[in-house]
Image 1 (cartoon, rainbow, N blue to C red):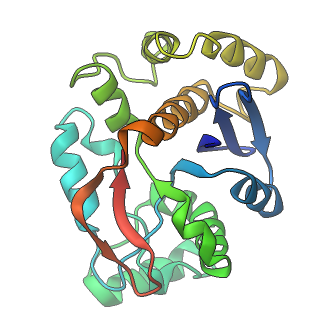
Image 2: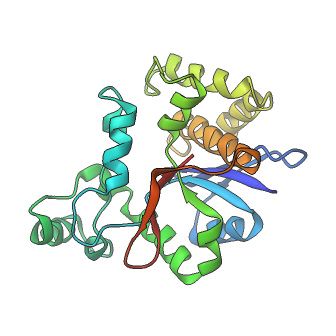
Image 3: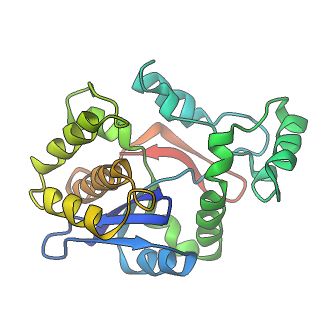
Length: 234
C-alpha cells in the first residue's frame, strides 16, 4: 500500500511518504497537483477539515479532540466554517452567514485556511473514490500518542520542532535527511519547519494504518450533508 501524509503550507501543501522503497517528499502548489497525488496514493492522512456542519458552530469531533489534547493544546483545534459559509467571497460575508445560523463568528484562523478547505471539499465531492482513501487527521494528537500521551514542547519553539523530528526519526531514519533537504529547497515563508514535521507524523500514521487499522474520533462516525465524514482519524 502506498501511503502519505499531507499538511498545508504557505506555498500550498507539503507531502511526505514513508512507503518502503518509495520514500519521498513533494510540495503541491495547486489543485491539480493535489488531485494527482490523491490519484497516486492508496491512503492519505491530511491535516485539514473534511466533513462540515450545516448550522452548528463546532463539530462534535473537534470538541472531543480538544478534550483529548488537554488545555495546553486545545487551541490547536479550531472550528472550520459551516458549509453555507464555505464559499463566501469574503471574511465579512462568511461571518454574516455564520452568525445568521449560530450567532457565532468564524475565527480568522479558520478563514485563513478556508481556501484549502474549499479545494479539498471540491476534490472529494467531484471524485467520490477519494472518500475511501483521504482521511482527516490531527498532528498534535498523533504526536501525543507517539510520545506516550504527552508532548512537552510546543512546535512554535525550535526545541518543539526538534523533539517532534526526533520522535519520527526513531521510526523513520530518513526523516532527518528529508527535514534538512526540504529546508534547503524551500524558504521558511513557503514551507515552515512545523509544516514539515506535521506532514511527517501524518505520513507515519498513514503507513502504520496498513497494519494497525484506522480508528476515529468519535468511534461512530457522523457524515455531513455531502456524505463526508466528520471525524479525526488515527
